Length: 105
Image (tube, rainbow, N blue to C red; front, side, top):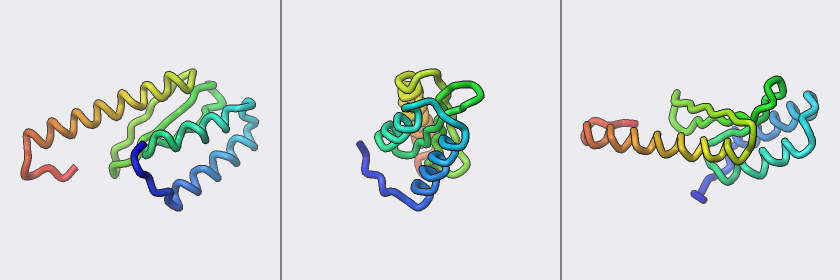
């Protein structure tokens, strides 16, 4: 796992997710699953979509570069997150090769 400093934004996001879970009546274990999985994947925010019964994750490491993934299971969600990270790495590498002196990411 990469080093990840917990920021005020991380703390606020966790607090808001907990409030959302309590107020919307998430199924038993869903909040705990989100809280246990998220620290293993820095940069991703994981939540639950009550209306569609899906796990949602959004990656917001780069300014204005959001990647969303959705899934019925946390295992499939994590696999999609890994694949999204891999595609982003490949894209960044390609951009750096094409413009080695001008890449600002």
